Image (cartoon, rainbow, N blue to C red; front, side, top):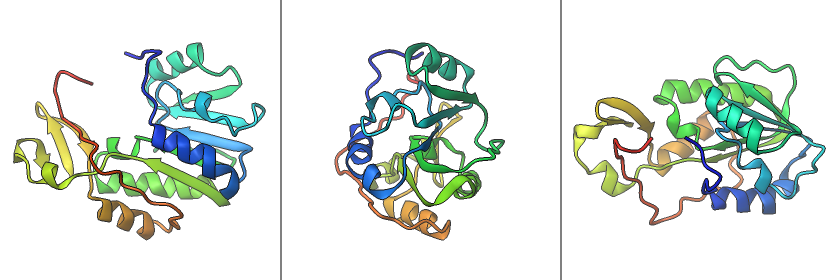
Amino acid sequence: KYSNTYELPMSLITFLNEKAPLLCGTTKVIEMGSGAGCIRDSLNFLDRECEYTCLDISENAINYAREHNLSNATYLINSIFDFKPSDKFDLIIDSHLFHCLEGENEINQYLETVNSVLEDEGLFVVETMVASKDFLNSSNDYRNNEKYFVDGEFNRTLFTHKKIEEILLLSDFDITFLSFPVGLKMILDSKRS
């Protein structure tokens, strides 16, 4: 279910609005795993004429985005693993897709796709959940290496901040800005989706 009261990840929005215009072109932008597409409306630095693409595997999310967000965006229902555009993008936004991928192999495949569709001077921005020390020391009922489960079903892939940095560097990304806010908590709960 999607709601107009969706809480935006403000740290990502703030970074994009303040830094993205200085770091990359903004004529072709894609939001990978866009869900309901709420981030686009908060990016006030983008020209309304820019080519903005929302990509998500969920037909329900894309339909919601079409109905409640921008009419000048392109909405694609597709898996990131099947996504083969003919064009490249100046800015690729990952707002919480990274931790929804099932393990390091899927993440590496995803990052290969991102590398192949990102302009040479483009910017790839990721906001993702990070495994905390307390969470890593919690019950193994929910944990199998970096994969976390709720009621026996895969829920999220969480890495430590050092592992995320290592994965990005090994995938040939240059890290311009890296931040891991302290104190944000995540609770796995089978009653929430």
